Length: 392
Image (tube, rainbow, N blue to C red; front, side, top):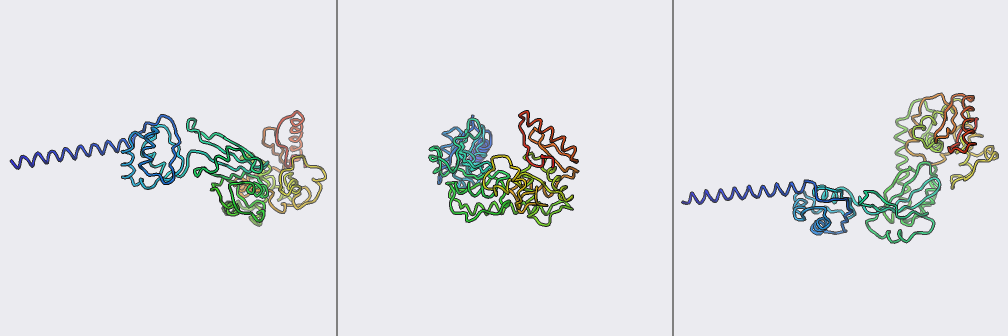
């Protein structure tokens, strides 16, 4: 009799274990399979929120099918205590496991609003954007000059602790323009005692926090440019006419100002290097312009003949060799082009009416290209006629 009871008890125990195992496997499957979310949403984790509150919120918004399974899954995966506050994009059919990963490991704020101070050659602007979950894209809410009137929608957003901040430098911006824009940025703090040397700030997009120190951000930009230049210098081609990295940076700044077409940078570099090797003057308009403006704003008009003839440390129509300093802050691609140029026999280039340039090896060929450009110019075609396009 006792043997029969023990046998039945053992059978029931085994059945219970199998049932428990089945429940665990079912729960694990539910944790990992595609979820019920029909369209993308932005889900916000409040600072200090518990996993219990978050799981309930996820279930209420239809992001997960069962808050209990989510809590158990995050506990067993060791993520229950790793929540990061912020706003997160949750895509359609995202699994519980993926949600847990997004909210604990994926990084703060992949959704919500962001502010970007964009510093370009022609000026600076602050852009406030908000993520639209329905279209899975960022929508511009406000755009304004940082030194001008601030819209109310921006004032209403700046105290959100989840708001993301960024400063973006375009290639070819001068150090003076960067400093002036940073001074006008109301979300930064501290003073910049002096304008950094031209060329030493890396064009890039920098994540910042509200209240960050301006001087510390400048130092970060300098460190980035220094690292980029050092890396490119270590991999430079043989036989270049540069004695120092500073000279390479000067050339890169000229290349940056002469073309915005990525595939042309190596050719433009070859033109100026060929001229240097042959003892020709560089004769590039952007250097003359820098001698007029000193990098403080844009010229906003064509160069005068008197300015082309006036000797300054940057006027390459008058001086021999490279100008005294860089004329802007060049990007990584321009630096790499200066240190690993294409090998060509080109000595001239002029705008071709498409946004790019026509290159030539002889003055005769170049003059024909100039004539074509002048005809396009006369017909009202748009293009960039800067640089060595005057036939010299």
